[in-house]
Length: 168
Image 1 (cartoon, rainbow, N blue to C red):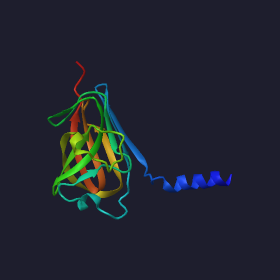
Image 2: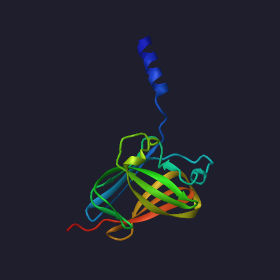
Image 3: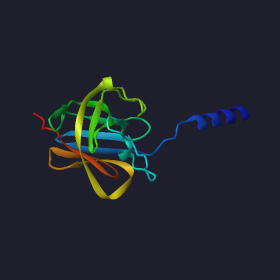
Image 4: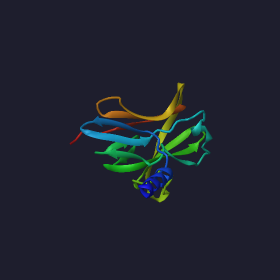
């Protein structure tokens, strides 16, 4: 019994800390977009402001944030095919960010392999009055085929509309 308890304690101590997970899902034109992500807290920091230009930042915490598309989805003029992708953010200028869709999935969020980036989607940056303590990703309908991706953290909001075309 003592050996079993000692082994259990070692396993519990070496397990990485986990933050709560969040999901956002939307269905438009019979296809869905779903995002699974870790929801870190700011704890008085302004994480997006601290990221230097050029920095690739993991979107979320712990396991890489994953987006699953069940059909063709168009972000601006960028077409994403059906599948699952890891998501990362890249700060390209002071108030400009890109959402990187990466074909590698299942990895820890800190393991970004740029050679597996499939596309970079520009995000619109704006501020909000109220601060959002925990990272929040929202997918909201705008019309029956257009949705909006919003990433909120602190007073920062990163947004991009997307379209799911009707089935032929």
